[in-house]
Image (cartoon, rainbow, N blue to C red; front, side):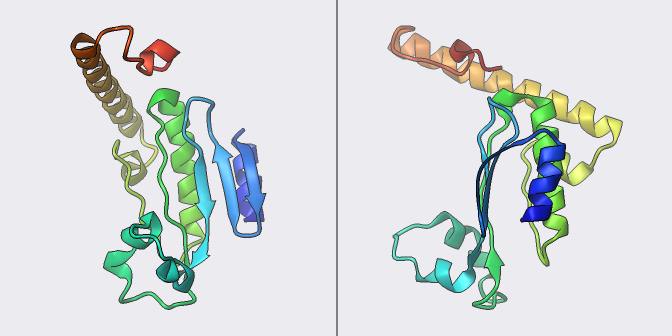
Length: 160
């Protein structure tokens, strides 16, 4: 955790919270935080909630998991923070993943999977543009259906 914290500080990422098995990071003010909160698999399995994100995401791997395996599962949204914040988030997840025995990251923009080549950055910018258009289209449709005074979108708040 110390190594991860040192690396994210070099990237200019704010550490919101830290603990012995937890770091909460903020890559950009318009980005959701990244929560790296590690739990033993036996602790996750023992939770009593009807539905649990960490337990659900690990279901297809539970046969291979030892009760003492450390698990970290989460998600973040970088859309309103922009391409650079997304790239920073990917870099953080690569560093974390490089310290793990097993790591899976799903990136809707495919940047994590394609790396730092120039064409990957172009594709990332294209993906962000398409997603922004789609989100704005949904916001416009909702405003038309329910009235401009009853719907607030990310664009209204200065997000793009």
